[in-house]
Image (tube, rainbow, N blue to C red; front, side, top):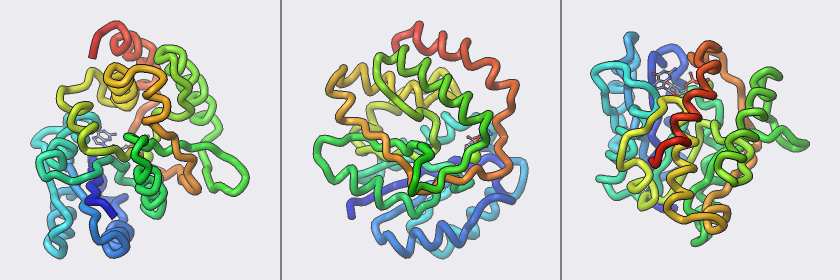
Length: 241
Ligand SMILES: Nc1nc2c(ncn2[C@@H]2O[C@H](COP(=O)(O)OP(=O)(O)O)[C@@H](O)[C@H]2O)c(=O)[nH]1
Ligand SMILES: [Mg+2]
């Protein structure tokens, strides 16, 4: 297994962090490191993480003084992994909506030299356990169809919070800040397209249908933010990133 780093952005996750699940992953994957980034939490997230890191040299805890949003938190952790020279670097939502048992499949995809980035894809189908709220599912379909048109690239699920890529690519994609705190996944695709162009991009990026995805309660993404989506997309696609 290549040296793999997962960045876990954490904002007020004290109640949701499932530490035994993270510990189990460390035991299962000897080359795995976690980079937890506390995004200026107001609860005891940082203390919990610090305590967890005492027992393992493969757990790093970074901290942002003030809450800066998911994109900034993820970027902070990714840049630390780039510096440390891990072979693969990715990010994974702290609520483990995508269970860490899926990680193996991500790494397997990246064993093919053509593949540069693997994105979790929440596609409900026979044989999978992917359960989403109906409203979120349909909003997601409209969103993905719009983004596919804007990118001229068929993408099913841009927003899944589990992505893994070659660190060399991560270094290029995260070298500058993002426009959006929530839609930076779209910016990642746009930046990859600017590097490789189409059609190369369509083989370098793989969407991996997850076997399991759980709609974990406690999402902090407010409906009011969703109303801003068209404006944010406009900003992203009217500029060169
Ligand atoms: N809501 C929120 N989440 C953040 C922030 N910074 C980092 N995160 C992390 O981003 C991830 C996704 O958040 P979540 O609330 O589960 O969003 P959702 O499931 O995509 O609706 C979690 O790991 C959060 O802890 C922030 O400023 N706000
Ligand atoms: Mg979530």
